[in-house]
Image (tube, rainbow, N blue to C red; front, side):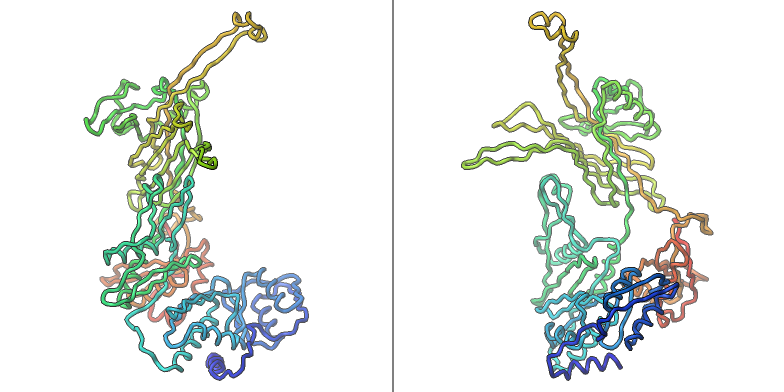
Amino acid sequence: MKCKSLIALVLTLACSLVLAAEPRWNDSPYELYANGESLTNVLKNFAASYGIPVTVSPRIAGAVNGNFKGDTPRQFLEILGKSFEFEWYYDGSTMHFFRGDEIVSRIITLTNIKTSQLRNAVEKVGIWDDRFSWKEMPDKGLVYVSGPTSMVELIQETASVLESQVVTLPRRDQYSMQMFRLRYATAADRVQSYRGKEVVVPGLASVLRGALAAGQGKRGDTTLGGPVGILEGKQRTTSVTSEMPGTGEKAWVEADSRTNSIIIYDRLERMPMYKALVRNLDQPSEQVEVNVSIITVSATNLEELGVSWQARDQKYGEIGYGGVNDQTPAPGKNQVAILGGADASFSTVLDSGLDYFLAKVDALVQDGNAQVVSRPSVVTNEHLEAVLDDSTTFHVRVQGNEQVDLFPVTVGSVLRVTPHIQGGNEREAINLEVTIEDGQQTDKEVDNIPVIKTSSINTQTVVGLGQSLLIGGFFQDYESDTVGGIPVLKDIPLLGVLFRTQSHDRKKMVKLFLLTPKIITDIPIGGQAANGREVYGYSFQIGSKDKDRAQEILEYFDSRGFVTSMEEVSSEGQPFYYISIGNYSRCEDTQRVANAFPAPLKGDVSMINSCHPLTR
């Protein structure tokens, strides 16, 4: 066999000749004129012209039209590959053509040979191609290889044969290492910048490290982000490793950001636990769009907004209405609960009165009694905090011993909101956790540094679909001097005072925050399913009475990056398992799953639906 002959060459190689991972073709130009010829035939004819055996992936398809020319055969392949999105690999005897998304990754564990020995061996026989990924941990005997299936399998087989040629050393069979690909969650930590601070949002790898630490009752230094950390620049810590009981070994978890995967090294019997945990944590989440309007309104015109303010205090309970509207509001409609604190604040859920409220705001803006400061918008995942920062930064000169430093001072509004969708599949409402911090520069100074007054509101409320949350309570004093009079005459020295008018205006303004959340749903592709629901996509569905076979099919496609799900139903009193694979906009695209389905894996499946509609 080809694989055996290559490995035998590794073991008997007596010289240092390195074979290139490229055929020994000549450097003469290669040109192609095609008129609707299939891409598969073009590639086969190309390899045949140089006497090279070839394999072409079933996923490579398309018709070739036009003129393609390369100064060398390699350049020709590069030009054609960019046009039709395929790649190639030469293993020393056969040329393999495949799509870029067919690249696989594998972790190879070595106990009897060094990682450098394996690398030297595969390079000498021409198995290795530098276009692909090779990472190693020599101290642990681990090699991480990513590339075409044919190359990865050759390297794996080479490692197995080389290992068997060495006297077997004591193995640590009680330990294992596995890689878990994530589809929805993020494996590595993400760093977010906020007003000059860096906040670390933990990925799934850090969550698993924390779980290991909790099991051992130890602490370490993995940074976890949180609401307090964002405002105060502080971070909490937890353990990063977990020492295995009774041994000097340590379980560890690493994140591979390139493939969004998690690599876990631990006892073999604990791997099923990790597998189930990762599957449960790696779940899709809804997206929520939050539109925010920051409005300042004159306090004397607040009642014109048509909102009934209900005053409440955390200590004394209801204390009446805030004097803005004398009429009792209808239950559940536009009521405002005033929170206790140094500055009275209030919030309400606007439903049917939202259009009227916005119209009154526009009218007050026209009269100069209100101003729409800004209208930012942000999209975030459910349960993930979003930050909207509408602020201004200026620098204050601070005198040092030998130099002058510039100290940044930031004032403005910061809004942090975390949405939680309620109602299950019906999605009836959104629970909003809101924190607002508002800073204002005052006229006071301390050591020539302006004093900043900061107020904050923390609240949590449920907002129905189509409703808006109105939060207020930040009061600001504005003063202005206006000079008027008769043009030209008012500017005459001495006599001009007779034709001049002066006025001093002072207003108390209230800052309001209007939050309108909206769930971003999938876009229907048209049509309805038999159940009357709108169709959002199509999948390849297969059914089996054998739970183990169904789980095996699910894991096979899940490990190859397909979107998968399994549903258990009862059929004639017996459990039946439906596996949906893929999510495509057309029925024809589900053929990709059929092409990737190994015949031995189908076994005794009793149902196949190549065009299963996905509905919501």
